[in-house]
Image 1 (cartoon, helix red, strand yellow):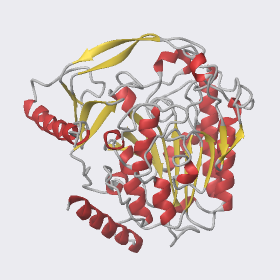
Image 2: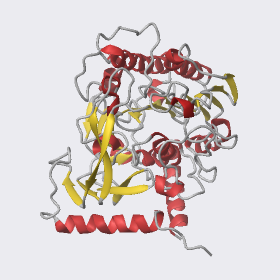
Image 3: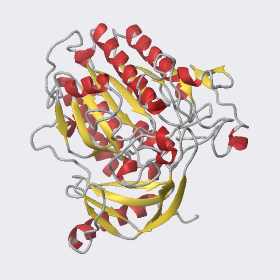
Image 4: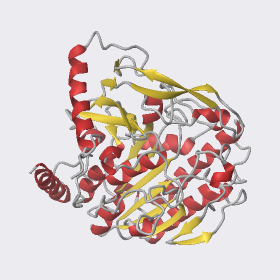
Length: 469
């Protein structure tokens, strides 16, 4: 009954969306009266503080700054797991890792996201959209789980992380067994990606995105650009090498910033800007063990943990006429909400399978009085459920768990050293202590009890083994 009720509610909302009910009107432009386009730029391991205006850096990021001036910066955007495959599967499916069982980072030939969970591509394809993904896929490397089988009309890029190759800094013999391949529309076009190819990845993804926009300017489209960078190993093209004056990481970020500029320019040049929603964010926080080859976050810990340094990513959304430009929001929402929210705006039917995300358009659009429809958001690392955040983003409860903390960072592409720490049951006031420094469990037992109830419900639903029949 619950699933059917949710589906009827979703379809009603989609119908209202098509009629323009409850949505701000477009301010004009050639796309007026047509279904909106959607562009998602999804970075890999970029820190919350890697771009202005979220923080000041030693390298310029003018195109991201321009996007912020034209849209809204969301300071409390979360992913449910701060690891590559789990984060991507959550974005594409609208489901928690506990539901899909996509945990951690999957390697070559992995099955990845089960086809029983629909993707954004499949949802939009059924709505009549042209769909494309150019970049790092990392949610399946089998025929039935690669992009052409998962709702994407066009695709090009790597099936997994760019460090899963013969030059891996910690385990080259293992990863060297598998050639890092470049795929183009379902076939391998580069059988072994080398150090000569890696510097071109950002450029290739960008060129394909710009070309796709130009060819499909007269029909609605969904464009997903999951960059391989700034995941290590770091590479940039010759046009940005040494340009930042802040080392290789700065050069890489400047090239990503250029990519953002090229994509937004293509939208403007083709008369599509007023009718296109562009979302810019990262799959998780920085991989800080790589020192000067890693991004920065002001929050506790980083990638591979359930602290905000791992799960909170900088996010900008631009949608002219519907999102007020030059604004900032502290409202919390999560990557699992992107699928239902975008589907709502497009008038698309939701997946037939259950999903966990909810339509948060009123919150993204900063509608007066808008509140988050979730009671909580869960966080996990691998297959371990570790924390819950209240839907309003105010309170975060860590369940007892182990986590990694950095001991010694390395430099120039080498991996640093971690040690394991333990955290007990802890409550943090994220409004007054966003860095998770002071446990206030004893001061707010009622809040802790409420979040423990949510955590117990989540654990029973997604992490309790089903008895064998």
